[in-house]
Image (cartoon, rainbow, N blue to C red; front, side, top):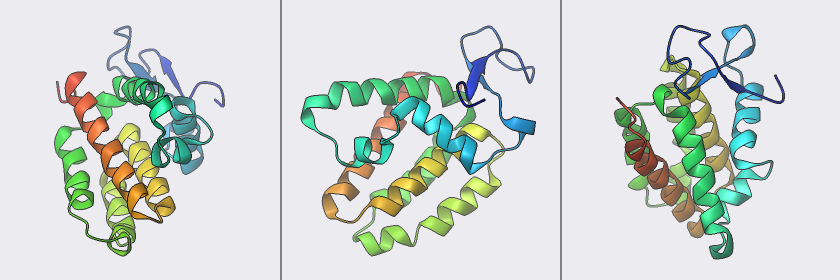
Length: 158
């Protein structure tokens, strides 16, 4: 499983053969270890730095990674689920307030029944843990906006 956290196929009777990647979690149970592998597959080992320390020179590469991630995970996340969490982050005034969202993100992830959403919320939690200044908070917000935009672009919720 280490090489391919997602693979094409019809493992659960869903979208097999349509290009959508089905989740191949061990024992069909979600875990942070598997989620970390998925995130690294799409964004690389230094995913926190890639997202929170965005450099203009690599912006197109960054957007390509966001697009690929969303295109392959969109079926497991709804626009309302994404916007629910994003609305809380968008309206924050301070970094301290951001840290208080971690339990709320965990609650939303705990209620989620799709591995893709749980993995995305794991990613958001990892990013929240690493935000220590206003510019990183802005990058987190920008990242979330890109996720929502490409979720819409690739037909999420359809």
